[in-house]
Image (cartoon, rainbow, N blue to C red; front, top):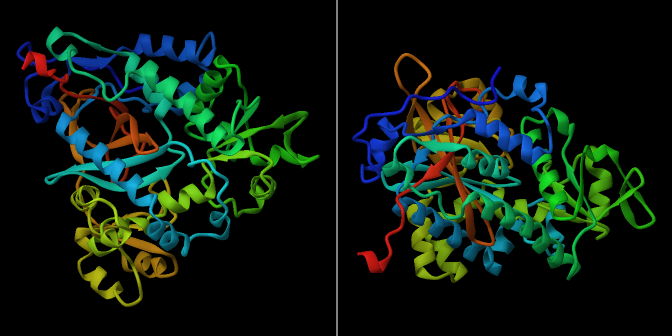
Length: 443
């Protein structure tokens, strides 16, 4: 089994950086993944002499063989939406509204902003459309490794840029993010020991990224370990893993509110201020509850927050209409279900999410027992890949990795099917390239 999708052939010699983005995504394979270089990068970053066999067996399509091309205009539009969301979240009217439907743990404000966020977009006819926001988004470090392993067969396309940061700068920014989160709660200094926590971490699909984070932190002098929450105990006013006191928990759990019994020890230490946790329940409530999107695309609500008209305009143009499913509107939503996508309010990873045109009556009735939002369907864009006798088009979505309203990295995910996955031949994470910025002096 391979860690990545097959290498692709180069394309015609008339492929140039000046070619339209749409044409590049249909026919350009001038930039492709150097599998040998990827292995070298992973081995170096993981501190391993050879890639674990388990990783080779379980991750056949983690990395796509080709990049995604995105126009600078669309990248700027996505960055505008990210900044606008941050502006709205900072308003009292917004926080009071969303915290009213949030779990009890979310009422506690420990200080940190809540870590890296993932803003997921589809490129629709009207431009980039934000379909959801995620806390603890996977893939940021994996994509920095991936970006270093892409090679171009021609100078013209090789001049395309990875925006807004290069791989080394992204790694440094991610490390500094941990320090910022720490200092928002502990004022100064740095954590001595950090635990990367998830249930059965070795069985998680993105476990390789946990190891990348561990090694990144160690290179900067912070001891890091990967563990299950059940391995943590409270003792003498601290959180411990074995005989190591834990200062900081990088939380990769999908129990966002820390409500399940397995998270009881971590929850207690978090609420007692015995450990810095990022992301935390409040961050998920403020950013990632799908019901929040119904407010971010509501003109009247945005006016009530008092945000600048430019921020409101960016959100209204960049978020498809989203509404909470209620007993009163269920019949109307069913009638126009083919134009909608349904998501659980606290969902993640496309679990229990449905395209309306795929819904059965049985599933529809089951959905009535949960909390769902209905979002106007925005079809993903496409990227041609090789690996079959003829090039195949895969769906693509874009993820902006951002902190405090600033985008650090943009990456694509290529896939087939209803939702994003890492099971598609030719698919997986893909770096994003755009036109090089032209300075005023050269215009």
